[in-house]
Length: 317
Image (cartoon, rainbow, N blue to C red; front, side, top):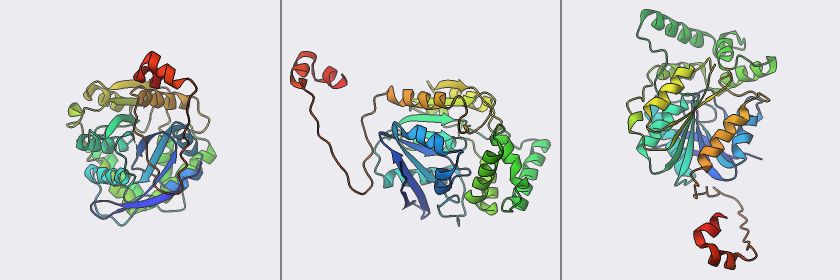
C-alpha cells in the first residue's frame, strides 16, 4: 500500500494536501486537529487504523487548512471553512457519492458538508465527535480553564520540550506507552505552528452545529468510546439523539485514538464496514491519475443463471 500526496485549491484559494489509498467504495476522513499526511503514514498511532479502513474502502485523507502539508498561512478557522476544504478534496477526486468519517472535531465538518450536499453523502459516520464544544466557556471557572489552555499552547507548543504538549497527549491517549507518547507529541508539534494551534483551539470553542442535526437526512452511525477522556461519552450520545434515525454504537476503552495492538479496533473497523456495506453502494472512486488496468471476466453458466433467477438476483449472487 502506497499513498500519493496531491494538492487542490479551495474556493477561497487555500491549497489543501490530500491522499487516497486502498480500493473500494470511497470513505473520506474529516479530521482537523493534529494531522500530517506524511507523518501519519509513518506513525504507529495512525498507520494501523489507516490500513484497517483501507482494506475495503478507498480511504481519502487530507490536511485541513493551517495543518500538515496544506497552506499554513491562513487567517480564518471556522466550520464553514473546514467544510470548504473537504469540498475541494472530493471535487478534485471527482467523487459523485461517498461516505464521510468525521473524527473528533471533524464531525462538525462532516455534518456541515452533509447539510450542504446530502445528495453526495451516502453515509455519515461520526467517531469520538461532538456537535458543540462540550465545555462551553459560560462560567467564570470554564473561562479560566480555557484561557489557561490557550496560554499554555501559545507559550510552549513549538518548543522541543514536550512538557507543554504532554497535557494533550495524556488526555487523547492515556493508555499509550513511552514510544507512542513521543510519536503523538511529535505529530502535534509537526502538524501545525503554535499560532495555528491557538487559532484552532479558539475556533473549537465556537463549534455548535446542533441546530443543523435535526434536519440531517443522511444515514448516520455514531461511534463513541465509553471512557474517552478527550471527548466525553455524553457528546456522542447527544449526537445520536439529535440526528434523526442515527444508529449509536458504544465502544469500550478510554483512548481517543486506537493504539496499535489495542483490543477493540476491529470492532470499530467492522462497525464501519457493516454500516457502509449494508446500504449496497454502487459508486466507485475513479483513479485520479496513472495507469489503470481493467480486467474483464465472465462466469461460467451466467446466462442460464440470469434466465433462471432474473437479472437482479443473479447480479446479487
